Length: 100
Image (tube, rainbow, N blue to C red; front, side, top):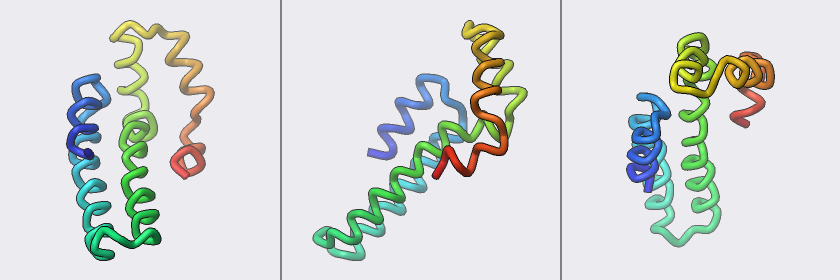
């Protein structure tokens, strides 16, 4: 499932961070599930939590390569107003809060 998400997100131009991160979190979630022989509800919750970290990779470019990402949004047709509003709504300091 993680690889499928990675392919879809990469194809929809979400950046290069998605593919390796999706593979890592998918393998981590799979490993957690295997520790409970795919029958532990407690470990299934932890595996879901680990897999949910995939959303981190979607926001990663906005916070790490901010100027380039915002310029890419403008260049691909979203417009300067959209990029400015996104930067205003999601300041760099909000990253830990948004990912949490």
